Amino acid sequence: MYLEFERDIAEIRDQIDKLLDLAERKGIDVSEEVENLQTKLRDLTQKTYANLKPMEQVLVARHPQRPYTLDYVERIFTDWIELHGDRLYRDDEAIVGGWARLDGRTVMVVGQQKGRDMKENLRRNFGMPHPEGYRKALRLMRQAEKFGRPVITFIDTPGAYPGIGSEERGIGQAIAFNLREMARLRVPVVSAVIGEGMSGGALGIGVTDRILMLEHAIYSVISPEGCAAILWRSAEHREKAAEALKLTAKDLKELGVCDEIVPEPEGGAHSDWDGAAARLGEALRRTLEELCALDVDTLRQQRWAKYEAIGAWREP
Image (tube, rainbow, N blue to C red; front, side, top):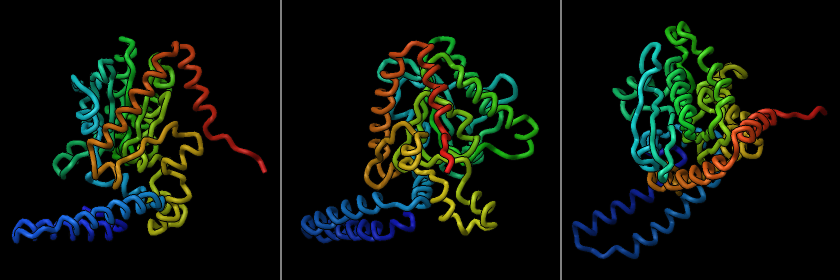
């Protein structure tokens, strides 16, 4: 699957595939032509992804072939043991969590999980958690705190589920409670925005000591379509909204919201899952080393200071 702005990239890849097929069928040497096209492809891909508009970044962050939480868990961690349920209502599969090891260090991993096909998306609720998902996440974080283990969260959701059942069971209260309790945790907490981090649905597992963002991930209070519908009364203005929201990793790093941008492989994380996981894994290891060296009081003071500094403004 190719996005609209990847049309030229797709055409070159198609040319390469046709040449390779011709070489296989006819026994013709096309190595020189293929090498030239591959060089052209690399240059074009690098140039295209280095100059993405905000709305194009949104499309990359939502790419259906982009790796999700469990894809990173498989590639970065070992000894994964998934835990289930909030001990109050049910197990919300839009949020996954459990124990794992990161280079021998035991950590608690919590993340939002989307599906690859319609059946799995229905089971995962398209990565939109219910209240019980956030309560499960907090239960696991408290368990990590009990045993003195760091927490790593993966953020990738279009938002918390806004349905009637979700409202009846207190979605707003569940998220608000997580915000307060995560701010109080006595262990290091790191979050990685791996796709789209939208609204309170992302914040429900996002109050952490360090916020890492993949290069083409997005993080915002509202989607561009939702913002455009409110301000301009039409989702057609989503490109204007995406630019105004400052939701890209580069924008958020400049604003002091994001602590580190993790570079993605050429063509985005969806083009090379292993490469994306290797880069994110290295950033997580380095960040945890820094945080685990701090005592609890310093850790919590720095966490509070980080969020108090966000949203500063100047009067004209």
